[in-house]
Image 1 (tube, rainbow over the protein chains, first blue to last red):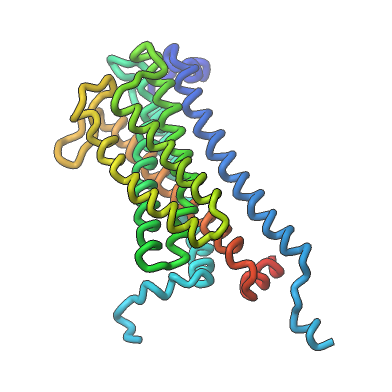
Image 2: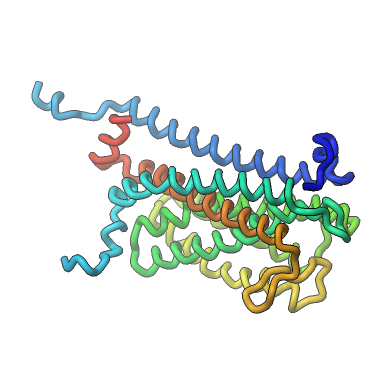
Length: 61
Length: 248
């Protein structure tokens, strides 16, 4: 283990901005990709909900 | 059908793929999460400070995996684009489309983390060196693929045009990979290769490889999720998709 304290860990030996800037952007980008997929999926669902599909029950009645 | 042989075209049917991929996604997702936790623990917590670069080198744990995936995803995307061209199989082209945004994201992350690494070690965010420039060209290839596909209304024609573009762009991958050998670049040569022992300390190397595996799993999971969405979008006129959407 290299770190004597949490603030030491956050400082990254003076390179905190660069290291956390890299890690942070990765986390942000992946989160953005996942949430955009969620929205895209929801959009299909909504569109499908708007146009009712004939079910077997509809045909019978 | 003889049970010994696997009929790969069986899974080329979008509906079968949809079900199979749906079952696979949670496993790849969980693997990505666990590997990323282990890799970050190894890389940020256990691995020692580098003698030359101090702690700035820790960017390697996301930079190298993202850069590797930016190339791997491109090759897989071009492969599926090519299969779609040759066999005229719809699912292959959908897979190529599903990979493009993730590949572009990986390329962007490789460039971003590279800039943040270049500043403290080289003194510049960006240099027009062969490695960096060819990686930027890769980003434009991904964007070009998506833009070309989006600009053609007929989906099948869009698939063919974008597939061809992806195949032509493959020429850039060896250029990126060998750029550090072919030209005198500011970017360092490979620390890890198949032909010689890696020039890195063990915990650093281990952390990097675990993170690379995590990125692999993430890319597979996300590409499958996006491919399933594309299947739903393109096959929405079919009864099975309408039933699928109703059920959820």
